[in-house]
Image 1: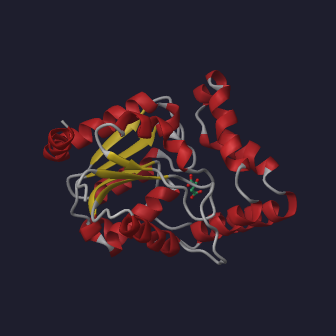
Image 2: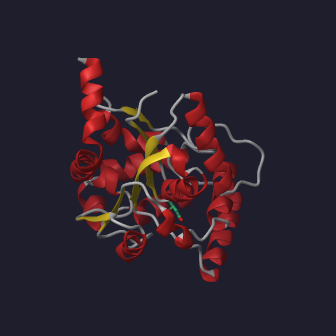
Length: 260
Ligand code: MLT
C-alpha cells in the first residue's frame, strides 16, 4: 500500500506517454502511474460500445491490481471526465483530485452532432486528417509557432491508435454524464488547472468546476492550450508540487522516511 500514489489519466486521443514530463518529475518521490486507457496506445480495446463508466471500472480494476487502495487522480480532459465520475462512484478511493483542461458539463446537442460527424470522418478517412486538425486545435499559438516537436509528438500519439478505437472513444465522450451536480459532494483536496489558450475546454469551464468544488484552487497556465501539462510542463509540475505540499506534505515525508 502506498498512500502517495498519483495516477495520471490522459486525454482523448493520446496515451500515457503524454504524462512523461510529470512521471519523470514525480517518480522519485511518489508512486506514479500513467496507464494507457481503453483503446488508446497499448491498452486493451474490448468490444464496444464504450462509455466513461467503462473507463471508471477499468481504473478501479487497475487500482485493485496494483494494490492501490487510494490515490491522487490527475486527469486531463477525458481523463478529467473519468476522474470526476470515478470520485462520484468511489470517493473512498480518491485522496485528491487534479482536474486539468477539462469540464464538468455534458455536450450540447450541437457538439453531439459534430462528434458524430467526427466518428463518420474517422471511419471514412482514418486518422491522418483528424490527427493534423486535432493537434492544431489542442495546442496554443505559441506552442504551434515555437515547438513543432510538440505538435509532431501529439500527432504521433494520435496516429499510434487504431481508427476504429478512436471512433469508439468519441462515442464514450459524447455519452458522458453531466457531472455538475456531483461537484459539491467532492470532499478531497482538489486543484483545477487550465491553459489560458485552451480552445477545447476554455478557462470559464474550469472556473465552473472550481466554483462547484468546495475549497478547490484554480491555476491558470499562460502560453498553454488544451495540453497544458505538455506545453508548460515546468509550470504544471510546480502547481502540482504546491498542491501536494499544501495537502499531502505528511505523506511525502512518510515516503522519504521509508526510502531513506
Ligand atoms: C480530450 O482531450 O480528452 C478531448 O478533447 C475531450 C473532448 O473532446 O471532450
